[in-house]
Length: 91
Ligand SMILES: [Zn+2]
Image (tube, rainbow, N blue to C red; front, side):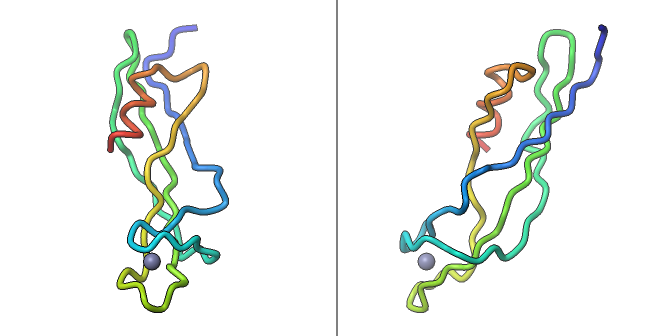
């Protein structure tokens, strides 16, 4: 099979993420958006990463940060190269 463009859809599977400001574990998802961290060439193909990022609401009333986005994800997939995983975690 000759594939010129490979699109990889990725999403963090953790139930949440701690607030980067106070460390409180959130219970409410505020929303989500798509990020395109990088177009990564893999051999002769171009790999497009499409990462679904969730935003959370910090439940700590004394915390100055009201919402925050989950950070990087590690993708383990036989169809992505190590370059693709590095592009996600470093963006
Ligand atoms: Zn917080």
